[in-house]
Amino acid sequence: MRESEQKQWAREHYKGIDNLLLPSYKPNMRELDEDGIRHDVRQSIRHGFFSTSAVAPLCEPEEYQRVLELACDEGKGKILVGAYVGEATQEANRELLAQAEKAGCSHAVLVPRYLTPESEEQVFAWYKELIDSTRLPIVLYAQNNPRLRHLHPSGIALEAFEQLARLPSVVAVKLTQAINLVRAMECAERLGDKILVGPVHLDMMPLLSKACTVQWSGQWNAECAQSPEKPYVADYLRAIARNDLQEAYSLYWRLEPAYSAFFKLQAPLLLKGGHPWAHLKYNQWCVGGNGGLVRDIGKPRDQVPVLTAEARERIRQNYRSIGIEPNRNDEEEFVVGAANFAKGFGKANMANLPLFE
Image 1 (cartoon, one colour):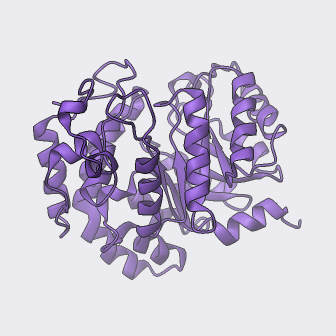
Image 2 (cartoon, one colour; image 1 turned 45 degrees about the horizontal axis):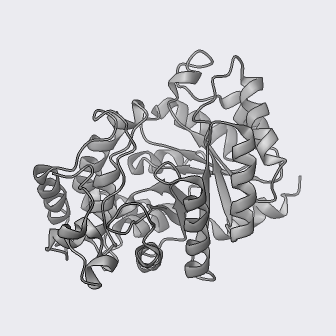
């Protein structure tokens, strides 16, 4: 059967790394730092990423719309921009998809963060309603979801995904961290002939590439194990995509210490529904990103931890372990963000120091 135009587009353009675009704020933490957001879009291009996806949970809805507009404007013709869609109601999700389409996004990632389905049919229906409401190409989200474990021990509703993968506008599936290897292989075998499979686990890719084409990975903080000058992760994806496994093995062991340290930090938090948001910002800043603190969204510290001095030094050592010297030293610049710092703002201008000590 002939592939849809959306699926053909994805096979041509969805190649490499799709990273995370985290919001930046002015020192009062109430307004977006538009220059800082643009800085990070340019930085994603410098890293050699094919796409950047804006993170929604750290923003108010109207702010998130503005982040998408800024990213699409700054990245136009140079990098794809994806939207994360996973609000509490379908009305809010449909509105967000419409905003993403209007802003110029190239695709959307649908994340059923609030769905508590009784069956795989309900999972399918949740996705299908949103897919039918937009012209954007769609990325599915495969995670170890505790709300879906009654459907399958992996937390992944693969039966629903297999039906969704047949739809013309469904182009890819993200296999996120903490996914079980056996279920990942099932996804590769059952979905890989219909849509693009994008594992976050770099160490799974050589095996999964024997079951399907692996040409992309996202949406995650790939900056944890590379810099624009030493794009190890991006190069690793290119080697996997062209089936040059010897080159891939060599690159993997070069980046492995930093990647494994990042995985050790993030995977347990994902299983609890959290992320180390401040740590991700610090990773990006160490290799040229804007940095800046993120808002404290009120989640427990075992889900969203504080970025301590010890954690910051550990991140810097992780880079050094793979031959990358962090090119930022003034942590006051990190706290306020590079764009604000260049305008003369410092810690004294901050309303508070969320998630930082």
